[in-house]
Image (tube, rainbow, N blue to C red; front, side, top):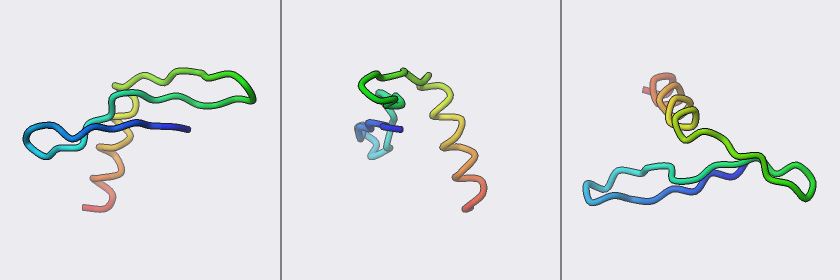
Length: 46
């Protein structure tokens, strides 16, 4: 899984592109799904 991020003007890290590499193909992932998982991880690590 590859996730690319950028830092906005408020120094927040924001995902801008995500995909899974499967051999020589890329399967895109929804940015909303990535944001959801990041929120779950943040909640777990407090």
